Length: 240
Length: 133
Image (cartoon, rainbow over all chains, first blue to last red; front, side, top):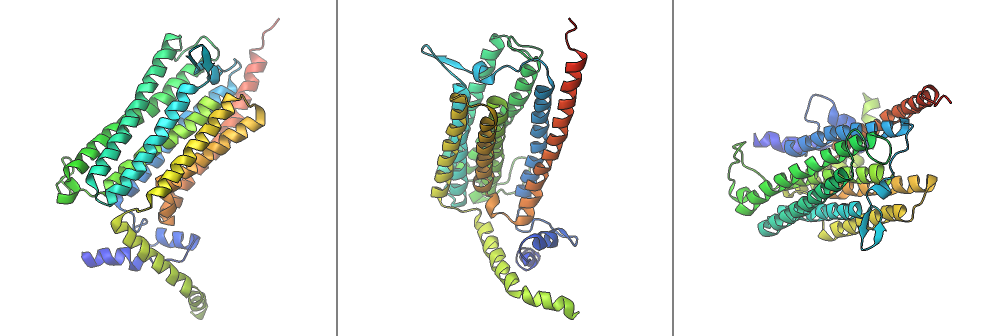
């Protein structure tokens, strides 16, 4: 068994560079992702499917916005906040963007410390990431409340095209759900790291398998994806 | 048979270099993705700069092609940095990178289809629902 694993990672990974290597990896009835663990590969494949879901949302938003004859509400004004007596366009969304980027930064460092088996720093950075995420969701709740009080509904709003509300609630709602799930995921894994599950080989509650520090990287992949989706939402929904 | 052997001979050093590469990545796999913290901080900084730039596009109220091209440019740069560095795609095996990154690119075909479709819908709406006065 150990020998098989060895040949799988060393001998069978000899490939020419470029496209020929890709073809060699994918052909002849074998494992396609040689040195990538199943956990990481499955997270990537899940993220790919999630990409399609968000693509569909953004595409339907694009289609409704391009095909409506009624003017689209100006996001720059809709999402403006009045600070003091000055109206600053899009300021809340900008702050939310910075918060999410910061959470991505702390997450990337958590992965790094995880592989160094630095439990305290890994757990602390993951909890910081979760805190940034929770802040983001809180600000989104504030934004939703503000818009609902101003009369935005999925079937209409005071400023223009009716589809604005449905697009907004659908896209940001789905993204906010992802952030919320990510926060729960982060706290759960941070707890395991803190407790030292991956050092003593404690078996998981659901899987009854021993975990590895790689789960921190896999959690990180999900978290960075949430940030990635926000990059597209920020550009295409708020700035467009 | 010799026909096959000759290009294999030529690729020998190439293959050899790749074995080293694979061994190195295999070794790094057991330790996981290890990169200097400084790299993450630099990328973090760039993401802040790019986000600020895209916010300023709106703040100064740029319009037209300049606005769209700047927004899309900053968006693509940010997405690229996140995927390549934070998600470590730059160091993953090429077979995985292509399997994950190519399909989303094909969504652009879908985008093109829907652009034509919504143009058409818009045209029909303007023609059919024009105020008759």
